Image (cartoon, rainbow, N blue to C red; front, side, top):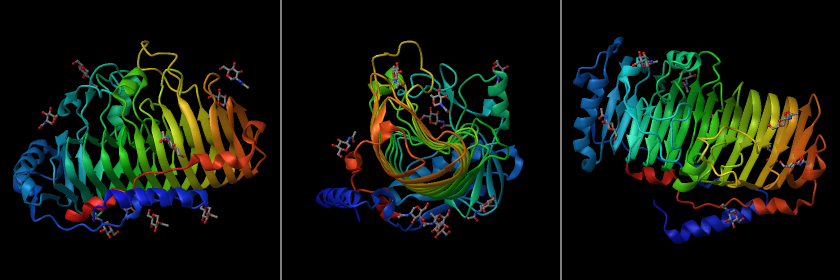
Amino acid sequence: MKMPVALVWLLAFTNLLSLIRGETNNAVCKETFKLDPRPHSVSILEFGAVGDGKSLNTLAFQNAIFYLKSFADKGGAQLYVPPGKWLTGSINLTSHLTLFLEKGATILASPDPSHWDVVSPLPSYGRGVELPGKRYRSLINGDNLQDVVITGDNGTFDGQGAAWWESLESGSLNYSRPHIIEFVSSKHILISNLTFLNAPAVNIHPVYCSHVHVRKVLIETSVETPYVLGVVPDSSDNVCIEDSTINVGHDAVSLKSGWDQYGISYGRPTTAVHIRNLSLKSPTGAGISFGSEMSGGISDVTVELLTIRSSLVGVAFRTSRGRGGYIRNITISDVDLSGVGTAIVADGHAGSHADDKYDPDALPVVANIVMRNFTGEDVGLAGNFTGIGESPFTSICLADIHLQTSSEAWVCSNVSGSSDDVSPEPCAELTSSSSSCVAGGVIYGGDTAGQWYYSW
Ligand SMILES: *[C@@H]1O[C@H](CO)[C@@H](O)[C@H](O)[C@H]1NC(C)=O
Ligand SMILES: *[C@@H]1O[C@H](CO)[C@@H](O)[C@H](O)[C@H]1NC(C)=O
Ligand SMILES: *[C@@H]1O[C@H](CO)[C@@H](O)[C@H](O)[C@H]1NC(C)=O
Ligand SMILES: *[C@@H]1O[C@H](CO)[C@@H](O)[C@H](O)[C@H]1NC(C)=O
Ligand SMILES: *[C@@H]1O[C@H](CO)[C@@H](O)[C@H](O)[C@H]1NC(C)=O
Ligand SMILES: *[C@@H]1O[C@H](CO)[C@@H](O)[C@H](O)[C@H]1NC(C)=O
Ligand SMILES: *[C@@H]1O[C@H](CO)[C@@H](O)[C@H](O)[C@H]1NC(C)=O
Ligand SMILES: *[C@@H]1O[C@H](CO)[C@@H](O)[C@H](O)[C@H]1NC(C)=O
Ligand SMILES: *[C@@H]1O[C@H](CO)[C@@H](O)[C@H](O)[C@H]1NC(C)=O
């Protein structure tokens, strides 16, 4: 099923043509894939795990995964988690593994920080995100892996984040908070048919990864806390996120690529991302955001079919001086907004710096962004575009956008672009000729995440 390179390029070209014709590009998510069962399967019960919600099962998981490593060259193996509440600290996965959570199975994250390893910061961030220095490892970790499936019959990961949110608020946190799932430098990852609750910080964080597919997940928190993000593709490529519902306090989906001078020198962009059919809610953040950490660049992203409700912001582009990098070649279409404070934000003065060694002359570029077919009711402000004087946002193209707004409509500075069939009437900066729309051409290879699942 893997496509020859020539065909990939042909598809890329076809996508360009269809974009100019006004159709959507949907390469990365398009492929349907079937999962062959792994030839070997063991249950976590065979390793002494106890699903009473109280016994700590970290060792059982690590022993099971260590055992399953030996099947890596025999088609891989499945670790089956039956119904029950399985308390655990941080665990490491292995390649060619399927972690399957049965209906009624909940993996409960231990709220005790001593059950979590502490690791070095990511090189593209140079430090922990909320505290300088080290960070906690995530609940489920994949480091340099390939061919990993985390799935189930709607089993649950419960991050039990309340204790972490409290420590953050009270200033007693010793290291930056952990995530539920993090893959680092891994490829061919599928995460599907699962529920995620109460993450300490991010729910799903692929960083330096290729070919990551997230589908049919429900991500929620039990209370509205401003500290939780949904899915955060970070310096990763060929990522698909689809058919999911994400209700979290902060950004539901956020594309990132490193922080200031650390992200610039690591230099790994987030690119070839396809996001479709999501229902999003973020009372203190955005339904979907780009940045503010974007120093490795973010490009070639197609987003379509979003429902965004009860959110502070619908779509956000965030950056600032010192970031360097770029956000370009982004197409977002078919977005339905309701109860949103500001439908579109592009902010060139957002976010803090990793430290005071950033280069203020490292100016980010925000260009070639197409937003088409947005409808909205109960919207506060239609758009707030605040570019950077020395590096204005350019080629922002708005088409077929109809928002029912309550207050002043558009706020614009240091931005230019075009509009076609937009109400309320956009600011003058966004009403040049409509030719720049085509410049938002989103092209990426057709070597999709899905196509790789042939071997399961
Ligand atoms: C998990 O992986 C990390 C990095 O690869 C390693 O430092 C750590 O010791 C591993 N933990 C366990 C319990 O295997
Ligand atoms: C998955 O389980 C959650 C509750 O844990 C439920 O709200 C959701 O509707 C379920 N999703 C599916 C597809 O069954
Ligand atoms: C932070 O570290 C101190 C000293 O080791 C410890 O007493 C405290 O419980 C830790 N706090 C958290 C939230 O882990
Ligand atoms: C997820 O569930 C759907 C049915 O809702 C099923 O068709 C699909 O095969 C499942 N995917 C995986 C990876 O189990
Ligand atoms: C969107 O995703 C939902 C699951 O969240 C699914 O039921 C629905 O069929 C999908 N719609 C499209 C158009 O793909
Ligand atoms: C506009 O987006 C809506 C979803 O918000 C979709 O149902 C509709 O088909 C789209 N219209 C066009 C012309 O693509
Ligand atoms: C627009 O965004 C800028 C930059 O974040 C902010 O200072 C300003 O208050 C916003 N304007 C409105 C009307 O929301
Ligand atoms: C553009 O940015 C410059 C520098 O940040 C600022 O002085 C200027 O007022 C901005 N332009 C507008 C129209 O706000
Ligand atoms: C954006 O797309 C244009 C073609 O439309 C291409 O020339 C350019 O290299 C792309 N930029 C990035 C950063 O991908």
